[in-house]
Length: 157
Length: 101
Image 1 (cartoon, each protein chain N blue to C red):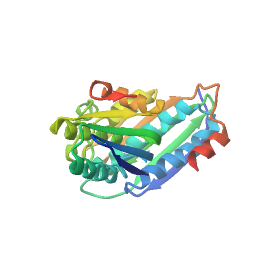
Image 2 (image 1 turned 90 degrees about the vertical axis):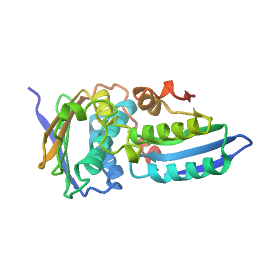
Image 3 (image 1 turned 60 degrees about the vertical axis):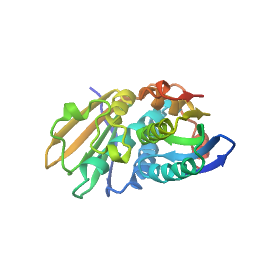
Image 4 (image 1 turned 180 degrees about the vertical axis):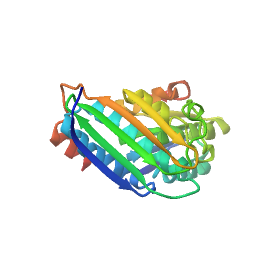
């Protein structure tokens, strides 16, 4: 049984500029687990997809906040929950099919869940129409070649 | 995030940089489409050499430009694609539509 070592909770307004904010705060939090460049890139991409889904689909016709909950466990498992109180998803199975999108006119590829499933170890979606959606993603950090702090600073500059 | 456009004889080259996500994809799309509308090139080159992050919004961007170029009988080439971006491209099956270099 793994033990929780740290937790972060961030509330974001559903504005598209906050997609980058979500990636930045998750990157800062995840750095404690010494991920590799590839693992960090996977996590950032998955978080970006989940937050974008909340903005584009969840809050398409209403507004509210997006909650980003991140936990690190002592076995270096990362738990990330992205939840909104938006319109919800009537058919989660269909929504998770590759190329399914409710916004084709915006050139949405419909690959958000496919990316999350491919880049994380597990993805669970809980949704109630009219009440909101939670996406829970887990990934165990296995890297023995962590991102050097200096390298990350250069990348972000 | 931005894009720098260079036009050669029958080619439009779009040098993308920074992060490509849902927030900035529309602006990039508009700049590239404007250049393609003006030049009607045979080849549109999307250069990802300076791109530090891309999610599936970038796939929508590439697929949309592929459709545009197909409509005028042209093609799309992706150049200097970093490994983390190739991973997203391959997941989307982009290698079936465009040359990824």
